[in-house]
Image 1 (cartoon, rainbow, N blue to C red):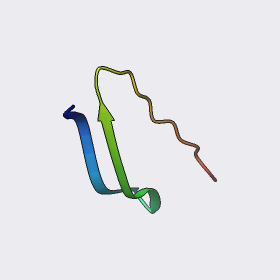
Image 2: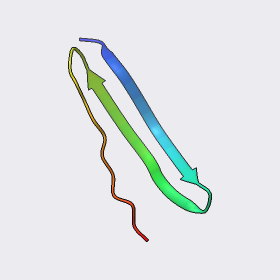
Image 3: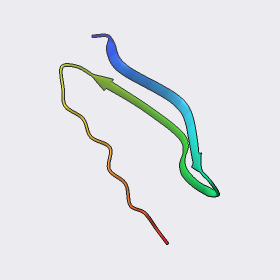
Length: 41
């Protein structure tokens, strides 16, 4: 089966906060997938 979504080495910052660091993710469909996070202060 071919991946519907594929991400490798994703890093994301919001201002001075590192939100994602070197994330690799593959989602095969059909599916419903959610990504949840926690904001730390």
